[in-house]
Image (cartoon, rainbow, N blue to C red; front, side, top):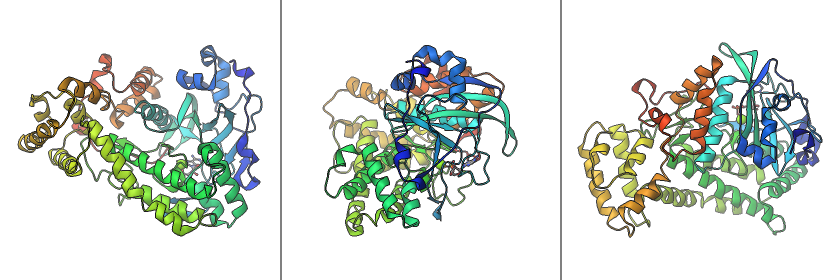
Length: 478
Ligand code: AMP
Ligand code: MG
């Protein structure tokens, strides 16, 4: 379809007035296309030729409104670092309409009713990070929002320094956050709360619409989805960095990519966010914070659902998380079936990786080639003995497998990515992009979509992170 044939709807605007505020985007000046995502274009039924046009850049810039578009910002609250903030909202995201059940949102297209003292902009650096990482998570098979395109601009935006502004058009089946419910619960606006719950059910859990007790079932689904997402993050070694309840998706998606990181050397205590002094959102804390956030959601839903019943549901979170995590770790290690004692076996592995300061991604990729020859694995750690001890138990554990070595290796190579977009790699792409060279953004995008393939041209990004860049913290500014 051509852009000018597209028709957008705005289902969120049917919710009560309190939920949103209409706002027009403020386009950036001197814009240019950095990247367009053909895969997402296909999902939206946009012709690939359209992606090369000036009109497309204007569309991403918020300067070209498609038929039916009625732009608005969403209102929400949230617990930020454990403290309740009664009103946040889309301060720099503008929703421009829905097509094929995907909601389009411009991030960085100017101020809204909820911008507070912010400028409503997003800088090139953080926009490249979000654009590439949402695609990388998709490539890894982890639930996430995605993006249709990224444009840059010569217009400067002030952060610690002057930086270039950019806009990404993000798409998601849902933009509702735990904090969206907290907003109405806090204001004691229970009619709006109920309308929002019905909307979220229709949007993300339509099979529940006619259930009696649908709100309890809804909470049950969100608990399950969140437990699952946390297990996926832990297994792949992803640290989100800002797990405030306003950054938690009611649909169980990874949203709002900020100072995130993939682990370099395995470190359970790793904190990617520079402003997170006490490590509330450290890598190891994520599953527990997922539960803390669900508790905040539970409180918000309590005017609609019996809280004791929700408590019971939440009581299953730990089990759901652990089951999924064990399953994923079993897959990473190429085990046919889980057994009693596997949790201890996995803990032994993680302790060994932490003690030897081994690159998490590289370890599993190297193990995926393991056929009894240990040299490549022993080279990864500082000492040999702990790795040898663990490999002895792995050899024993593999004897319980019914599949042979070849079959196991093939499966593991499809489970353990060769490439994850570590921060030092992204930084190199950002530095080049800042000088107008987007070839690395293009390259990383290819890797992001297929992280299990070999991509010989990009081999240098498959190794352990260079010492100078390992396990660093990132600034939250974006
Ligand atoms: P985040 O940490 O990016 O999830 O943002 C937290 C809150 O601050 C959200 O309500 C954002 O919309 C808002 N915000 C962040 N950056 C800006 C900005 N540059 N201008 C306006 N609002 C912003
Ligand atoms: Mg956010």
